[in-house]
Structures are given as C-alpha cells and as structure tokens.
Image (cartoon, rainbow, N blue to C red; front, side, top):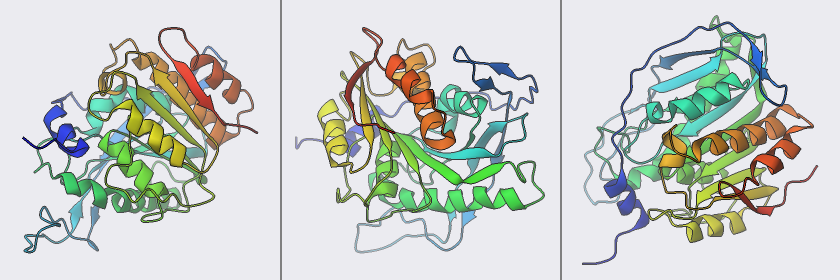
Length: 310
C-alpha cells in the first residue's frame, strides 16, 4: 500500500464531535488571573455565501461537477458586554470537524475581548464530501468571511462600531492551520491580517513561499502528533519570515489539546494563544511576559523557540 499523504491521514483521523449550539448573553464582566477583562460571550451563526466562486469536489480532475457558489455558515463569538472596539480572529476548523468542536477555545478568545469568526467549509467539514484538495480553496474563504465580518462594523448589527478592523488575526487547527498558513502565503496573501496562530499545522499542499515581511505568528504543536508530525510544524515555523514563537506540548497529540476541554494540555493552549492575541492585537505590554510564562510549564508546555520581540 502506498504511504498516505498527510491530508489523507487527516481524513482517516477526523473525529466526530457534535455539541449543542446555544447562545449565552452573560453580561457580567470579570477579570483573569492577570487582571485582564473577562467578558460574557454571545454567539450566533451568520449565513454567508460566496457567489463569486464555485464549490468543486473534483477540482483536480479533468471533468468537473462544480456547483455555483460556496456556502460558508460562520459561527460568530463576541464579547456580550463592553464597548470595544474588539479585534477580529478568523478561525479555520480541522478536516472532518466543525467550529462547534472548538467551542471552548473560541469562547475563551471572545471572553478575552476578541470577535471570533469560524466558518464551516463546504468540502472539509463534518458531513461534507471530505475532499482533501478542498483545503486549498479555503484561504480565499477566510478572506471572504473576514470581509463580511468587518462589514458588520458599519451596519445596524449588534457589532456596529465594536469591531477593530485594523487588528486582525487568522488561526486554525490541522487542515485549518494549513489554511491559515495559506492566508500568509504568496498564493493567497491577505494584507489585512496582522497576526496568526497555527495549531498542529504544516505546509502540506502549499508552495511554502511566505509573503514578506510577514506577520507575528504563534505555532503550537504536540510532540506525539501522529497525523501531522512535529517535524512538519517545525518546517513551517522555519519558513515563517516574521516574529514568531514555537510552543511544544510534550506528549500532546494531534487533536485533543485543541478540541477537548478535558485534555491536560487544553488550558495551556487557551492561555498561550490568548496571551499571543493580546500581545499582537491589543498592544498589551504585559502579554508577552504572560506568554513566556504560560509557554514554560514543566511537562505541559515548552517554549522551543522564541523570536518575539518588541
């Protein structure tokens, strides 16, 4: 049997994770252990559709069974209280997953003061045709979703006047991390993006030509990842041209640290990613020190490389 591609391994490793999709409007504001604001979280789904591009499950074949448009329902999480404006994070899910699988992570970002938009991709989400090549169409999906979310700032939406369009991050896990790296690549570069978070990612399928000068990027990867192994994450890190840091999860696997709140690494992932977003998107002067502390928890996190400076 020929060896599987990394994306093929993603297909076989896709985990079925469904949960109840509820919205909470908790208006109470607290603080984190670092004294940062902690907001209540509201959420809803935006019914987005890109009519300018097709959905083609056989994009690499001679024939085509493409259908018009791309359905991109987008789960939106945002601070239910506070005036903002709040920076934006567009999150891309893994192969065979949905945004709901990452609810704990995405809600933690919203509670920290970010508007989080998480699209469901038409060919790589749970219940779809699960087309590996569909990942390569997703960076353009991210840019489309970002445009539509930023437009809410000037509408009669609940988020009118509460979105900070000048500070935008892209983030993703697994195939979604590949998508995120695509947004930073010359193939699909979106100049509106000012930071990135790559969770268990690699350059699989990309031309590995990062747009320069690049943006600050945080990489987080489990050392026991057998779907997209650590070496691929380190290669992607080496190719990143801007300020960056690589956090290893000693013994961490491919999915559980990011989509299972009971996993022993989950809290650390939430902490380091939130610290990084605070540092890059809000200018919080204390966040970089918090990141370095949270990324050096014996047996849980190891700051394998740190090129973040200010």
